[in-house]
Length: 245
Ligand SMILES: C[S@@+](CC[C@H](N)C(=O)[O-])C[C@H]1O[C@@H](n2cnc3c(N)ncnc32)[C@H](O)[C@@H]1O
Image 1 (tube, rainbow, N blue to C red):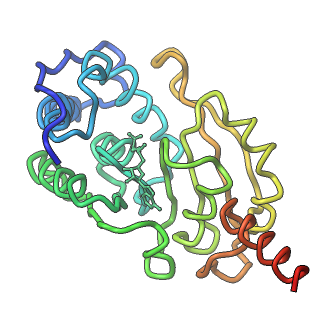
Image 2 (cartoon, rainbow, N blue to C red):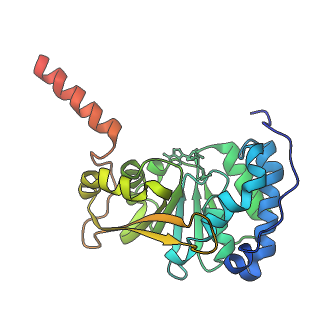
Protein backbone atom coordinates (compact mmCIF):
# COMPACT_ATOMS: atom_id res chain seq x y z
CA UNK A 1 0.00 0.00 0.00
CA UNK A 2 1.16 3.56 -0.62
CA UNK A 3 2.30 5.67 2.34
CA UNK A 4 -0.65 7.59 3.80
CA UNK A 5 1.03 10.60 5.35
CA UNK A 6 4.20 12.51 5.93
CA UNK A 7 6.34 11.79 8.95
CA UNK A 8 6.30 14.31 11.83
CA UNK A 9 8.72 14.86 14.67
CA UNK A 10 7.97 12.70 17.69
CA UNK A 11 6.34 14.56 20.61
CA UNK A 12 8.39 14.74 23.83
CA UNK A 13 7.58 12.33 26.65
CA UNK A 14 5.20 13.84 29.23
CA UNK A 15 6.04 13.59 32.97
CA UNK A 16 3.75 10.56 33.45
CA UNK A 17 5.97 8.49 31.14
CA UNK A 18 8.78 8.35 33.72
CA UNK A 19 6.90 6.49 36.49
CA UNK A 20 5.37 4.11 33.94
CA UNK A 21 8.57 3.23 32.06
CA UNK A 22 11.29 3.92 34.64
CA UNK A 23 14.69 3.01 33.24
CA UNK A 24 13.01 1.86 30.01
CA UNK A 25 11.96 5.41 29.11
CA UNK A 26 14.60 5.82 26.39
CA UNK A 27 13.29 2.65 24.68
CA UNK A 28 9.72 3.98 24.89
CA UNK A 29 10.88 7.28 23.35
CA UNK A 30 12.55 5.39 20.50
CA UNK A 31 9.29 3.47 19.91
CA UNK A 32 7.28 6.71 19.80
CA UNK A 33 9.81 8.09 17.31
CA UNK A 34 9.18 5.04 15.09
CA UNK A 35 5.41 5.51 15.37
CA UNK A 36 5.68 9.18 14.40
CA UNK A 37 7.97 8.41 11.48
CA UNK A 38 7.54 5.09 9.65
CA UNK A 39 4.39 4.29 11.66
CA UNK A 40 2.76 7.19 9.84
CA UNK A 41 4.47 6.82 6.46
CA UNK A 42 3.56 3.10 6.36
CA UNK A 43 -0.06 3.84 7.29
CA UNK A 44 -0.11 2.18 10.73
CA UNK A 45 -0.93 5.41 12.57
CA UNK A 46 -2.87 8.39 11.25
CA UNK A 47 -0.82 11.61 10.97
CA UNK A 48 -3.30 13.41 13.22
CA UNK A 49 -2.49 10.96 16.04
CA UNK A 50 1.15 12.07 16.25
CA UNK A 51 0.69 14.93 18.77
CA UNK A 52 -1.25 12.58 21.07
CA UNK A 53 0.86 9.45 20.68
CA UNK A 54 1.87 9.45 24.33
CA UNK A 55 -1.42 10.41 25.97
CA UNK A 56 -3.88 8.57 23.81
CA UNK A 57 -1.91 5.53 22.78
CA UNK A 58 1.32 4.70 24.61
CA UNK A 59 0.70 5.74 28.23
CA UNK A 60 -2.75 4.20 28.50
CA UNK A 61 -1.30 0.91 27.24
CA UNK A 62 1.68 1.09 29.61
CA UNK A 63 -0.64 1.81 32.53
CA UNK A 64 -2.16 -1.70 32.41
CA UNK A 65 1.15 -3.53 32.96
CA UNK A 66 0.41 -4.31 36.66
CA UNK A 67 -2.44 -6.54 35.41
CA UNK A 68 0.17 -9.12 34.35
CA UNK A 69 2.01 -11.33 36.85
CA UNK A 70 5.77 -11.61 36.51
CA UNK A 71 7.48 -13.47 33.66
CA UNK A 72 4.37 -14.75 31.88
CA UNK A 73 3.70 -15.17 28.16
CA UNK A 74 1.16 -12.69 26.81
CA UNK A 75 -0.41 -12.74 23.33
CA UNK A 76 -1.53 -9.37 21.94
CA UNK A 77 -4.44 -10.23 19.63
CA UNK A 78 -4.63 -7.72 16.76
CA UNK A 79 -1.44 -5.89 17.68
CA UNK A 80 -1.56 -3.37 14.81
CA UNK A 81 1.31 -0.96 15.49
CA UNK A 82 2.12 -2.72 18.78
CA UNK A 83 -0.58 -1.29 21.02
CA UNK A 84 -0.60 -2.58 23.68
CA UNK A 85 1.85 -5.47 23.04
CA UNK A 86 5.02 -3.58 22.09
CA UNK A 87 4.44 -1.06 24.88
CA UNK A 88 4.11 -3.86 27.45
CA UNK A 89 7.27 -5.51 26.13
CA UNK A 90 9.12 -2.22 26.65
CA UNK A 91 7.70 -1.44 30.10
CA UNK A 92 8.05 -5.04 31.32
CA UNK A 93 11.14 -6.85 30.03
CA UNK A 94 10.20 -9.86 32.21
CA UNK A 95 7.10 -10.54 30.05
CA UNK A 96 7.28 -12.47 26.77
CA UNK A 97 5.00 -10.86 24.18
CA UNK A 98 3.58 -12.63 21.16
CA UNK A 99 2.21 -10.01 18.76
CA UNK A 100 -0.57 -11.64 16.71
CA UNK A 101 -1.42 -9.65 13.59
CA UNK A 102 -2.66 -10.91 10.20
CA UNK A 103 -1.53 -8.02 7.96
CA UNK A 104 1.92 -8.51 6.48
CA UNK A 105 2.69 -4.80 6.15
CA UNK A 106 2.10 -4.45 9.90
CA UNK A 107 4.02 -7.58 10.94
CA UNK A 108 7.03 -6.49 8.87
CA UNK A 109 6.96 -3.10 10.57
CA UNK A 110 6.60 -4.70 14.02
CA UNK A 111 9.56 -7.01 13.38
CA UNK A 112 11.75 -4.14 12.21
CA UNK A 113 10.86 -1.96 15.18
CA UNK A 114 11.34 -4.77 17.75
CA UNK A 115 14.71 -5.46 16.17
CA UNK A 116 15.71 -1.79 16.17
CA UNK A 117 14.69 -1.38 19.82
CA UNK A 118 16.65 -4.49 20.77
CA UNK A 119 13.56 -6.17 22.25
CA UNK A 120 14.39 -9.84 22.76
CA UNK A 121 11.06 -10.54 24.50
CA UNK A 122 8.91 -9.95 21.39
CA UNK A 123 7.78 -12.58 18.90
CA UNK A 124 5.68 -11.49 15.92
CA UNK A 125 3.20 -14.02 14.48
CA UNK A 126 1.55 -13.16 11.17
CA UNK A 127 -1.85 -14.84 11.60
CA UNK A 128 -5.42 -14.35 12.59
CA UNK A 129 -6.02 -15.43 16.17
CA UNK A 130 -8.20 -18.31 14.91
CA UNK A 131 -5.26 -19.75 12.97
CA UNK A 132 -3.29 -20.12 16.20
CA UNK A 133 -6.00 -21.85 18.22
CA UNK A 134 -4.50 -24.97 19.75
CA UNK A 135 -0.92 -24.01 18.94
CA UNK A 136 -0.38 -21.06 21.25
CA UNK A 137 -0.40 -21.71 24.99
CA UNK A 138 -0.41 -18.19 26.38
CA UNK A 139 -0.74 -17.39 30.07
CA UNK A 140 -2.65 -14.23 29.13
CA UNK A 141 -3.99 -12.41 26.12
CA UNK A 142 -4.43 -8.70 25.72
CA UNK A 143 -5.86 -6.42 23.05
CA UNK A 144 -7.16 -2.98 22.18
CA UNK A 145 -9.71 -1.91 19.57
CA UNK A 146 -10.12 -5.28 17.87
CA UNK A 147 -13.72 -6.43 18.51
CA UNK A 148 -16.49 -6.16 21.06
CA UNK A 149 -16.03 -8.25 24.18
CA UNK A 150 -17.92 -11.43 23.21
CA UNK A 151 -16.23 -11.71 19.83
CA UNK A 152 -12.85 -10.86 21.36
CA UNK A 153 -13.32 -13.61 23.95
CA UNK A 154 -14.26 -16.06 21.19
CA UNK A 155 -11.03 -15.19 19.35
CA UNK A 156 -8.74 -14.99 22.38
CA UNK A 157 -9.74 -17.64 24.92
CA UNK A 158 -8.67 -20.63 22.76
CA UNK A 159 -5.14 -19.14 22.78
CA UNK A 160 -4.91 -19.54 26.57
CA UNK A 161 -3.62 -22.35 28.71
CA UNK A 162 -6.19 -23.66 31.22
CA UNK A 163 -6.58 -21.09 33.95
CA UNK A 164 -5.19 -18.28 31.78
CA UNK A 165 -6.66 -14.80 31.60
CA UNK A 166 -7.74 -12.27 29.01
CA UNK A 167 -7.10 -8.57 29.65
CA UNK A 168 -8.93 -6.36 27.16
CA UNK A 169 -8.50 -2.57 27.07
CA UNK A 170 -12.07 -1.40 26.74
CA UNK A 171 -12.35 2.15 28.07
CA UNK A 172 -15.74 3.42 29.12
CA UNK A 173 -17.62 0.54 27.46
CA UNK A 174 -16.01 -2.07 29.72
CA UNK A 175 -18.95 -2.63 32.09
CA UNK A 176 -21.57 -2.27 29.35
CA UNK A 177 -19.99 -4.95 27.16
CA UNK A 178 -19.50 -7.21 30.16
CA UNK A 179 -23.23 -7.05 30.88
CA UNK A 180 -24.39 -7.24 27.27
CA UNK A 181 -22.15 -10.19 26.37
CA UNK A 182 -22.64 -12.16 29.61
CA UNK A 183 -24.35 -15.11 27.90
CA UNK A 184 -21.57 -15.41 25.32
CA UNK A 185 -18.96 -15.43 28.09
CA UNK A 186 -20.89 -18.13 29.95
CA UNK A 187 -20.86 -20.34 26.85
CA UNK A 188 -17.11 -19.77 26.58
CA UNK A 189 -16.68 -21.14 30.14
CA UNK A 190 -15.51 -17.88 31.64
CA UNK A 191 -15.22 -18.59 35.36
CA UNK A 192 -14.68 -15.06 36.55
CA UNK A 193 -14.98 -11.60 35.04
CA UNK A 194 -14.26 -8.11 36.33
CA UNK A 195 -13.48 -4.55 35.33
CA UNK A 196 -10.23 -3.01 36.63
CA UNK A 197 -8.83 0.49 36.34
CA UNK A 198 -5.15 1.37 36.05
CA UNK A 199 -3.03 4.49 35.86
CA UNK A 200 -5.12 6.80 38.07
CA UNK A 201 -3.28 10.09 38.43
CA UNK A 202 -1.04 9.21 35.49
CA UNK A 203 -3.36 8.89 32.51
CA UNK A 204 -6.61 10.71 31.87
CA UNK A 205 -8.96 8.92 31.70
CA UNK A 206 -7.45 5.99 33.60
CA UNK A 207 -7.16 2.79 31.55
CA UNK A 208 -10.10 0.47 32.02
CA UNK A 209 -9.79 -3.22 31.24
CA UNK A 210 -12.07 -6.23 31.30
CA UNK A 211 -10.35 -9.22 32.90
CA UNK A 212 -11.68 -12.71 32.17
CA UNK A 213 -10.42 -15.91 33.77
CA UNK A 214 -11.20 -19.20 32.12
CA UNK A 215 -12.13 -22.23 34.17
CA UNK A 216 -8.82 -23.97 34.89
CA UNK A 217 -10.50 -27.38 35.20
CA UNK A 218 -12.47 -27.21 31.94
CA UNK A 219 -10.98 -28.82 28.82
CA UNK A 220 -8.92 -26.37 26.77
CA UNK A 221 -10.94 -24.49 24.15
CA UNK A 222 -9.49 -25.48 20.78
CA UNK A 223 -12.30 -25.17 18.32
CA UNK A 224 -14.86 -22.49 17.63
CA UNK A 225 -17.86 -22.56 19.91
CA UNK A 226 -21.17 -21.00 18.99
CA UNK A 227 -20.38 -17.64 20.48
CA UNK A 228 -19.74 -15.18 17.68
CA UNK A 229 -22.52 -13.01 16.29
CA UNK A 230 -21.78 -14.16 12.75
CA UNK A 231 -22.04 -17.78 13.79
CA UNK A 232 -25.30 -17.25 15.68
CA UNK A 233 -26.80 -15.47 12.66
CA UNK A 234 -25.71 -18.33 10.41
CA UNK A 235 -27.29 -20.87 12.80
CA UNK A 236 -30.58 -18.94 12.69
CA UNK A 237 -30.49 -18.88 8.88
CA UNK A 238 -29.81 -22.64 8.80
CA UNK A 239 -32.77 -23.28 11.13
CA UNK A 240 -35.05 -21.14 8.92
CA UNK A 241 -33.88 -23.08 5.85
CA UNK A 242 -34.61 -26.36 7.64
CA UNK A 243 -38.15 -25.21 8.59
CA UNK A 244 -38.86 -24.23 4.97
CA UNK A 245 -37.79 -27.66 3.64
C1 LIG B 1 -8.26 -1.25 14.84
S1 LIG B 1 -6.79 -2.19 14.77
C2 LIG B 1 -6.17 -1.99 16.41
C3 LIG B 1 -4.68 -2.17 16.44
C4 LIG B 1 -4.05 -1.96 17.83
N1 LIG B 1 -4.46 -2.98 18.77
C5 LIG B 1 -4.38 -0.58 18.35
O1 LIG B 1 -5.10 -0.47 19.35
O2 LIG B 1 -3.95 0.40 17.75
C6 LIG B 1 -7.37 -3.89 14.77
C7 LIG B 1 -6.26 -4.87 14.42
O3 LIG B 1 -6.75 -6.20 14.59
C8 LIG B 1 -6.28 -7.00 13.53
N2 LIG B 1 -7.20 -8.14 13.40
C9 LIG B 1 -8.42 -8.16 12.81
N3 LIG B 1 -8.97 -9.39 12.91
C10 LIG B 1 -8.07 -10.17 13.58
C11 LIG B 1 -8.06 -11.54 13.99
N4 LIG B 1 -9.08 -12.35 13.72
N5 LIG B 1 -7.00 -12.00 14.66
C12 LIG B 1 -5.94 -11.16 14.95
N6 LIG B 1 -5.91 -9.87 14.59
C13 LIG B 1 -6.96 -9.37 13.91
C14 LIG B 1 -6.27 -6.04 12.34
O4 LIG B 1 -5.42 -6.47 11.30
C15 LIG B 1 -5.80 -4.75 12.97
O5 LIG B 1 -4.40 -4.59 12.93
